[in-house]
Length: 265
Image (tube, rainbow, N blue to C red; front, side, top):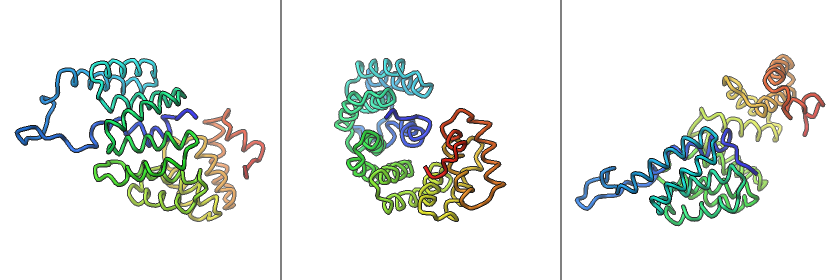
């Protein structure tokens, strides 16, 4: 499965890219002062510049150009763990599973305690039929005191727990993510879906209403909201959401499902 930057990469991976190098404790120079950019070699500085260019191209969807920049970074500094991590993310988007795993493995060898890297590799495993192997990597990320975005790993762990049909664990992860970051729309969407599947419509509606207040809604979110309102019996709310789905995503699989009345699929 090709990982989408707009959803879980956006939530779980892309932000991690922007935090590359920020997770670990700063090194200490020989005179006991904190290391700064002046302590890096010229090659390391040039490699970091290449990596930043790669990140920019990646965000723009120019994957081949981003990969070229990563390769140049690694030619300059073969021990730059963040560059291997970046390469792995690019290969994930390209559907190149073997190359992605090779680069994740190299990055983990160089930076085994990087929480963002652990989270990203866990998501890679989950998306490639190895959800049972992914949970320990999310847990490793969550144990890190330097991890700046635990809600991402919690959402990923919850999603992968659902793949494993462990709804109890999923509920625990999603609720902890909500406690840490109640404004995270991905968390609210996950909780809405989980509670809808449990037929706890009051809770499902509470969480989906937090999401539908956003300006930009995906077809997937609108379809979930429509199904919740239909079960609740609020036809006015349902019709309003259907209008949005029809206007914004007339060719989507979700609107096609609505048209054929596939509310229980």
